[in-house]
Length: 211
Image 1 (cartoon, helix red, strand yellow):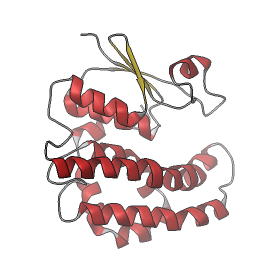
Image 2 (tube, helix red, strand yellow):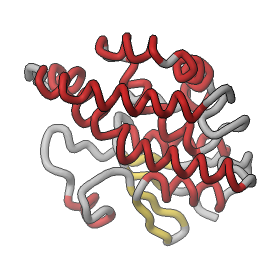
Image 3 (tube, helix red, strand yellow):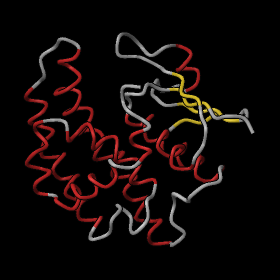
């Protein structure tokens, strides 16, 4: 079995989620950087992902895109600790949280808040404060619901680490580095406790956004 290849930049949250899954499974993989911040998406990436997104994935002649699909494939194709619950309800909760993250967490948190607050200044631009103000209520709603669904368990979908945790962790790292996150984090102590635990994992240390 050949080494899987992941195409995407280290700074991408979705690329990192796929990397985290492989790290947690103990899978040796190759990361091929795809940088689109300084220009359009490279044509070779569009061949792999026709919607001009990242990441894309290849393994033994099998091509795949969409981070959650890649993560599920990694969990099911390779040996190592299971990242999807066997219990029906816990698995349903994991899938629900994956959907929440894609539909309701990522757009306001990354596309509006993080890009404006962190990325635009890096590119020499001023952040759009109106976009940030519009995003914050939706960010707060999403983080509050994730905090509620987590309940008293150590992880988002129950007592064991799942793909849901690996999908949220990269987003939360960017989020907690914005000054706007402080009040939302105080309102969701359970989610903050989750972050302190998840951020200390080896998989997180092995997949920095900068490399």
